[in-house]
Amino acid sequence: MIDIHAIARFYGGTVCRDNALIPTPGHSSRDRGTAISACPEAPDGALVFCFNGDQTTALAVKAILRDDGFLPTAGRRALSERERQKLKEARFAQAAKRRAIEEAVASKATEQWDKAEPAEQSHPYLLKKRVPPIGVRQQDFDLLVPMLDENFRLWNLQGIAHDGFKRFGVNARTAGLFWPHAIHVANGKPSPGPLVIGEGFATMAAIHDATGFGVVAAMTAHNLAAVAKTMRALFPKRRIILAADDDRHLAENIGMRAAQKAAESIGGLVALPCQKTRQRPQGPILRTLSGARLPNVLQRRGKWGLANGCAKQRTNRLCKGRAWRHGGRNRGGGNRNAGLGATGQD
Image (cartoon, rainbow, N blue to C red):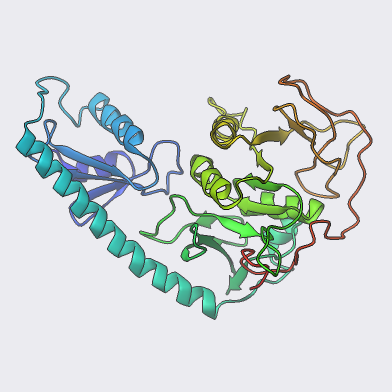
């Protein structure tokens, strides 16, 4: 029998209802998206379920457990039909239990959101990131970023402290959720211009503030593909741009890889930040890798901007063309002070 408590301790997780909850590979150390439970019917004695991953992720977790000595490396055998059925039932039971927990957390998150106040422009995190308080609220000293599903139902809240520390709701759903802003106008029709999808709230709020485009924050790199597919289903003919985080400082450029994969799955464009240049001291410039032209818009502050140019599948930086500062007018036509961003209303 596997030692659930030892697994939780080793990977910096916790034990909840006979499950070791540990970070899913590639996620923050604070993540608890992978549940591991003992299952005598399984050949290796363990059942792995990744709430923010898929079957491939679960198999990768099993490989890690095997390499670290928590699962046997030899003596594996094929499952009998009866064992397969029991495993299937166990997975369904685990998923149903998880769903019930997520439903309860979603109800509490909705109550918390309803009681929260409009976010203050003077919040230290907003001042540091130089973004307006669009689509977020505030409770005490924490910003609250709503995380919605494809039906724009609220399931989770990302809390952002004054020092930028971020956390999701405990036992809350994260897979496939997103923060949208100005993706529709007041009459429910798509807002003008392309739709830009990226990782964090601040990044996407800055892009919207600079361009007026509808934006969506997938919250994590691993969530980009799922959110991109949701947006493509909502907007079959709309141009969609994946604004990648360039994680070249890491051993693996997770942000770039995830954005490229998401763009390929929906026929979208990929853009990423370039390094600062003497000609563009205001901020990095986004370039496209897909051969399509992007609007010639430069953000007046913060991290992101867009540059005009055609990459034609090249990876050279596109810093050509005259960039101009955006004067604050909402070129997208939506309400830049909208709340959840789904309909342009709070």
